[in-house]
Image 1 (cartoon, rainbow, N blue to C red):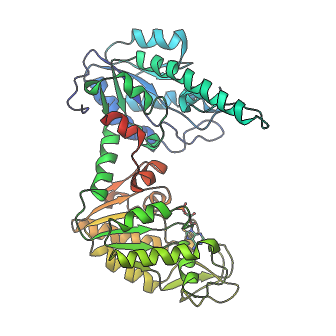
Image 2: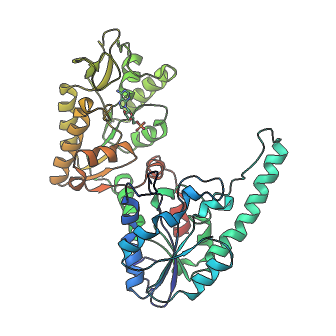
Length: 418
Ligand code: AMP
């Protein structure tokens, strides 16, 4: 079932959203992107004459925690939806059930943070540090048991289930995946945001227009191994950049000074290079670097060859020669995936490479390429440089997007498709 096919008139929808927004110390929302992202789905259901029961998590509470109460976001939700949303102080219990039952067409109910209950994640809480393996196993079994009741209860509030929380799609939690089993195929669906995310991932992994270029940046090879390995089966060009550069450079005998490096991953770097060769993938690494004499925005800087970094200096961004080489590859591409900056973009003086990559992607997109940017810091980059509107799609999912690119089946997606 798709959200556009379903007629919500007179129906109650349980909508799992990702309202896990950042709050300041006075509980003001500092970035409401995630809330805005769910609006099309919520508005569509309400406009159809349906009612919505909104479920979300906020933060990582280990029980009921005032700081993580979703009541802090209620006022802003009212403003965004243009209606008075009701609130249930507890996502379980009489009040939530009664309020859900009494919802009229066009009305909305926000449930308190689902993660106030350990059953949402299905992980035991409050175990003593010295708990034995048996105790741990028993606690796990107990929470899995009570998770069934919890999930069933959430499902009982509604006639249909809509998952619009891509940010948690890689988690098999009660409200993100398990709940789907209580609805048949005709009564469960993705929300608009999920639909867009799923489509974007599908375009880069399965519906590839070539050449396909992936730009993987960031700090550590170890955190990107699975992604790189999966991408080696898909891409024509793989640009590996950011802090990972120096592990590859050192592995080839280069001098990297104080640059970030994983010494236990040198063999892996060589293996990945060999694999790329075998698979006919053009692996592109930086040839020059912008180096600094300390890890700071105010450090002295100069450019040098990536494998000739003097002692006491470290590479904090790519140099102009690499920028040019990367941009050329990117501009010749028809499918582009970008994850991770080329340097320490948090420091203004080391943003140039990431900006150049972003601008090349925008140009390629103008020329008809499909570009997907996602997985944390590259999203921060395109926003910082004002380039978000020039790429095809900016993913809202950090870990979820990365797991999808690793080729994993996301439980939140599988639960709807089953
Ligand atoms: P990740 O979370 O793995 O995507 O890495 C993102 C982080 O990598 C950012 O915080 C960057 O500052 C950092 N990073 C990128 N290039 C470098 C570099 N050359 N040296 C140190 N850190 C880097």
